[in-house]
Amino acid sequence: MTTRSSTDATRVIPEATVARLPVYLRALTALADSGIRTCSSEDLATAAGVNSAKLRKDLSYLGSYGTRGVGYDVDYLRYQIAREIGVTQDWPVVIVGIGNLGHALANFSGFRSRGFRVVALLDADSTLIGQSVAGVAVQPFDELEPIVREHGVAIGVIATPAFAAQDVADRMVAVGITSILNFAPAVLSVPDGVDVRKVDLSIELQILAYHEQRKAGGASNAPADGGAA
Amino acid sequence: MTTRSSTDATRVIPEATVARLPVYLRALTALADSGIRTCSSEDLATAAGVNSAKLRKDLSYLGSYGTRGVGYDVDYLRYQIAREIGVTQDWPVVIVGIGNLGHALANFSGFRSRGFRVVALLDADSTLIGQSVAGVAVQPFDELEPIVREHGVAIGVIATPAFAAQDVADRMVAVGITSILNFAPAVLSVPDGVDVRKVDLSIELQILAYHEQRKAGGASNAPADGGAA
DNA sequence: TAGATTGTTAATCGATTAACAATC
DNA sequence: TAGATTGTTAATCGATTAACAATC
Image 1 (cartoon, rainbow over the protein chains, first blue to last red):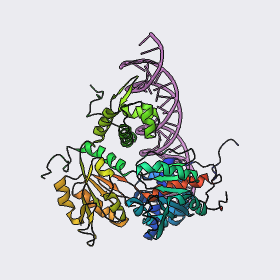
Image 2: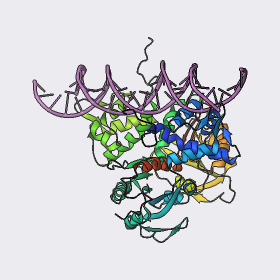
Image 3: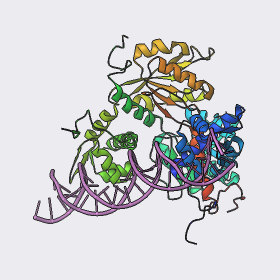
Image 4: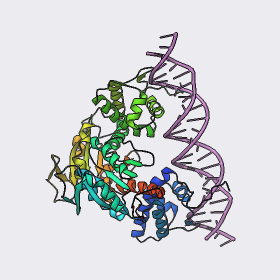
């Protein structure tokens, strides 16, 4: 057999699809919460903010979880997507850098509810150590290794200033973390096999600014004119 | 002439390129700060974390700002990219929802340094009104309209809980905001002509979890095994 | 059976990449 | 001129979309 069978092990899901699965998961949860038991691809697509062709194509990479002529069972599809993403299990997470942003992240309720558990908050600033944030004590950054080993941490969050980010990433990689979510405005270099995703506020704003600039003319809120509508 | 001329007005820059321009801008600023006056596409690509073919292709959409055999003048290219993005001008921004995250955003220094100015912090919770965050007083959400009109605000940031996000977006659109950065875990529906970008922590974590799950086997930090390496 | 809706096909569109002619 | 590096071409790859056969 040279042809790939479509069993769990060999299925490859396109990256663009992977990025949308959590959106579908959230939409299904919202539907379930409002008491809806069954939905069509059109319903779910609307709730998720995509078109139904894309939704069906995306779901087709996971398997055949709908019923023609009927639609999808909300709970069943939700479970299948959660399983595919891996959020049926619990993921211990460490957050490094407990400034304003780290503080906000530690308090973020969406963590627990989506299968992530903050097992430690770390900072290099000794004046923060021992302080309790969201019920978790801030520990010295040097404690990274024993914490990662003890809890089996695979995912690390960097919320430090830019200048510290590469060092933190290097240490994370050294102690065996293989997925990093980086909030610091810095390009991280990591070895193959380590995934980095970045979230960058100012980049998002700049992308908006680019498009905004091109709208001017019809815009009533353009910075230049007094806006005396 | 049916062929598009490559003058400023008609140039169309692919979305993927637009999203990378801010990264190049930041890399150029870092190079300039370390005293480097000239760089090759290879140098800049490394600093930005992309390959040099992609960088040159991206820059080619802006114009011809390099010198063959020599490279790019760091300051000149930086100015050209900043102008293209629109961050040579000042963008007034309002933040709605001053919880933990709104607080962190208000204090974010990358705002000012990249051409964005927080002109108001708004919240529906009357107990927050008047409180000063990052030197700016929190005002009632109802003040949105006069503030937007007075400052010519085109960009709004939503940092409210999910249930409030659509209402806030509707109000923003109604008063003339045409670009929204949404941190609430909710799908926003807005009219054509309004740009929405979303930043979603739990989605990013779930994408990492998906890939992490597929690494297990070789992983030393897998949650299941004791990790007695 | 008739109506509804999935899962898949195939066409189209956009992004990436390597290679190299142009040119400093 | 010789060496270096850009800007562009063209091939490849991946994502989106509309349409519809399969099938409940």
